[in-house]
Image (cartoon, rainbow, N blue to C red):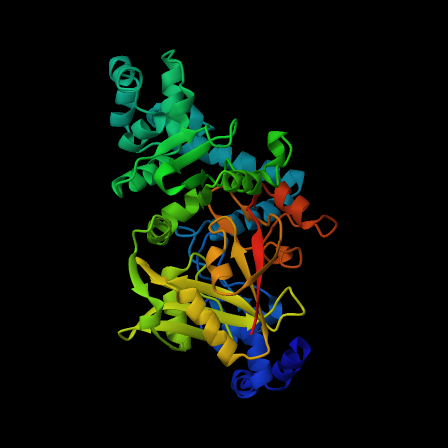
Length: 479
């Protein structure tokens, strides 16, 4: 298919998109293989052929000009770090080509200019600007509080506030508060190192009216559960991308099964454990809150039998998934939805099975409108699949970091096995697409790429970290 599309583009460079749109098989292939998040067909074609996403590693959308040039920059240097990195890499590459004599000439001219303008060869010798780098890098009002021993001792030692809580009030990172506490000789309490995200999630669960236990070691001792809701046999593990991902520079062994083992051990004690990353809470707060409320039985309930089922249009599907699914929208071949009073409440989207050859379809996305739970919704959708796709096999991969897949079993899916932990890459602040990090795609964006090295070695060498999840439960529905 790919070669056929490339040949078509070569022969008809001005009209290839229209021709592909009229060709059902080519259009279907493009839809299934595109990695972009829009419906602009030329962009989708380019992405499918080259397996390149239009989202940069910092979450910005890259511009598409034409097929011959592909994606261009993702924004000015002031708005996206990718552009700054590319500029820095280009400048560095240019400087590496300079001879020693050229560098000496540049340095001599710079020193001469500095002497003429300021009377000194280097900025560090200038008394008129010395105050700039001797000032603290945090706001002066914050610096004054952190250097006020009486105030900091009252807040940290007497009021027993955590480093994170103090940092949140002052608008700085909690390690900054810890540094000032250590300078004043305060003993750092282990419990005060709870992340701000963990505290906020705990506060959110308490705001829903539930008693909770934090840093609990009574369930799977000696391991700790971040947030436990005993009355619901439900727990939350808050995973900071930086602290829960592997960096070989740290010198420790990579623990690929740490998250999945904790989930299994909690399950053995009757506790359903949900893993939430700090990035998810900070960037997809409403979706995470709705998932928590659903697990606690607080979402508004609608009976599936009161919903009408019908095929969902592409635009409505994309908008619904963008607003309600953690992974956002994805191109699909079929999509069915449950409507209540003409409002889409739940959908399931299908595509060609990517990993299991003996399956006809794969469930690409399934989610419910935020704040709602459709009781019996999965069963109603599964029943419709049996009617709509008789004699087919439908496979679904249930994310064990978020769910145990009980609704699938109730709907008639059969549990096959678990895939084991999967991974994604991160810079410590946000996840990076697995597709983008495949070795074949690394030369397109990784300045330090070395073809002789593996994906992992290339990524680790560039300073990226690997985060392991809990894997997926493989579920099969025979229609």
